[in-house]
Amino acid sequence: FFFLMIRRPPRSTQSRSSAASDVYKRQVHGDPSKMESKTKIIGGVALLASALGLGYYFLSKEPEPKVIQRETVLSALRDLQAEFTKIFEDISTMVNELKKMKKLSPDYNPSIVKEIIFSEDSVYKRRMTTAETTIYQRYNITERDFQTNCSENYKNDPEIQKIQREIQKALDDALRGIPPYQLPSILTKEVTFDIFKKMLSAFAKQIKTVLLERHRNGAQPFEMDSPELTDYLNQSGLDKLKLQILFENGLEGVEHPVKIIEFAIQKYSNEDLEFRRETTEIRARYSKIIQEVTKNPEHEEELFPYSDNSSKVSMYTAHSHVDW
Image (cartoon, rainbow, N blue to C red; front, side):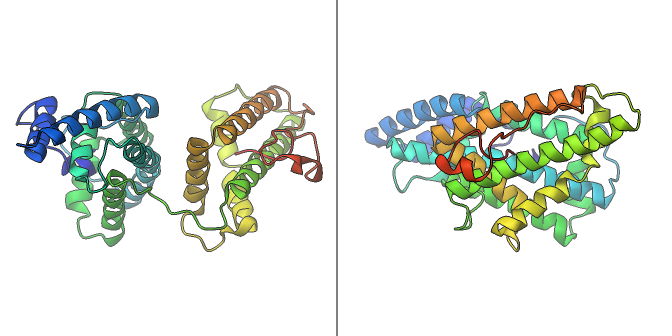
C-alpha cells in the first residue's frame, strides 16, 4: 500500500531478504552480542507472524490513473484505516511479545522490526493485500488511481491528508509496541463483554423483526450470504442500533466509538483465552440463529435464553446477554 511504501526500501535495489539483512548488519556491525540478538529477533518475529497472520502489500502496475470523486476517496480511506487498524494492533502485540521474550531490547530501533515486517515474504503479505483488494473492488477503483488521487489530485485536501497521516502514525506507533487506540477507562473487560453481548442480541432481534415483516408480506426467503440479504440488512438500521447501544453504555462523545469497541474486543480476545472462547461461542450461536431466521423468520430460538439478572453469575457466560 502506498502509504507504507515510503517506509520500505526501493524495489530497484536488493532483494527484500538481503535488504533486511543489510539493515541488521548496519545496526549491529562489529558487535557479536547484537548479532546474536538479531537472530533472536528474526526467529521471534517468524514465530509470532505465523501465529498472528498479518500481511503487507506491494504496489502493482495499474492502468493510467483516472479522477476519483472526493467522497469515494474518503470512504475508501476510512475503510482502509479500519482494516489497517486491526493489523497494526497485531503488530503492536507482536512487538510487545518480543519485548517480553527479551528478543527486543528496551531501546531497540523500530526500523529493525519495520524491515522484517515489510521485507519477509510471509503471512504478513496476505492480510493487508486481501484488505486492500477487497476495498478497491468495493469502490470499483484501482490502487494506481487511488494513490494518484490521494497524493496528487487531493494533496491539498485537509481531511484526506489527515487520514493518511493518521494511518502512518498508527503504523509508526505499532512498530514501537503502541496500539492504534487507547481504550477509555470505562471499557473494562467486563463492560466490553457486556456491550458485545448487547450488540449481537439487539442485532438478532432486529434482523428477525425485519425478515419476519418481509415474510408476512409474502416475500420469498433470502439465500444465506446472498448480496440481496446483505443489502437488505444494511438498510435495516443496524448501524444506528449499534451507535445507540454504544452511547447508552458510556461511549457517547468518544471519538470513533465503533472502532474503539472493535479494538477492545480484539485486545481482550488476544489477552484472555476465556474471553476469546466465550465470544467465539457467542458468535457461532449468533450465526446459527441468523441462518435459521433467514430460512424461517418464524424461528423462535433466542440467542440468550436467560434474563439479564440470571446472566450475572459469570462475566463470560455465553447464555446470558448479547453478541457482536
